[in-house]
Length: 107
Length: 130
Image 1 (tube, helix red, strand yellow):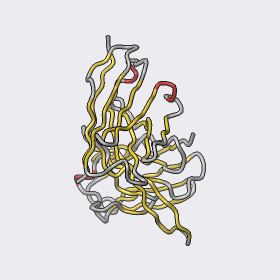
Image 2 (cartoon, chains in turn purple, green; image 1 turned 90 degrees about the vertical axis):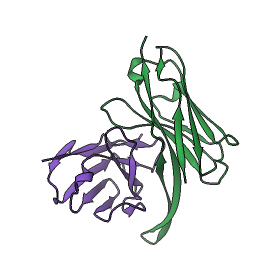
Image 3 (spheres, chains in turn orange, cyan; image 1 turned 180 degrees about the horizontal axis):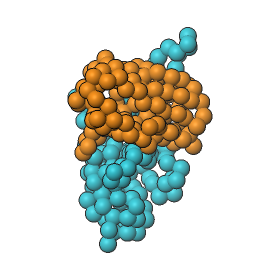
């Protein structure tokens, strides 16, 4: 099975900051990487698919990059509504797998 | 508009079998390429992928839970059912179903098909306790 590792596990930042999350796969997964945002008590919301394609309706401040084993999600200018937990998920192999999440908190 | 809704018991006893139903609208599992996955999340913990069923009735399971899971579909009813046997308190979690769709994109000059969970249900909370 493919293991997904996210770092850091938590991150403190301020409104307006540029923030980057990292996700690493245990083997090469090409660009088969999705990013989700989850707020407390809510289901995850798809942000990015295929490593860098932004889902319709997602603000342009969200971007994704990477291929192979190393991936990043960047928020260019943090907004108050962006404080949440972010998960990566590989869609290369079955079973699918998620990272353990990065919690973004207000500084 | 695509919607999914999970339903099932809120409380099950240890060793019992959990049966969850995902009822969806706005798409059909008879459509080529369509898929539905189940994912769970224990309180305060990360998401865990459980199972997936495809339009052609292919089924896939979590390696660690494979012996306990069964996924099935009722296409005319627009439902996907997940059964999990021998429930334990560690299975206490919110269970989600999600639609999986694919898109063909060009990467480095070649076409690839990428799948992702684009619409999720709100989840149903299951507690395992005697």
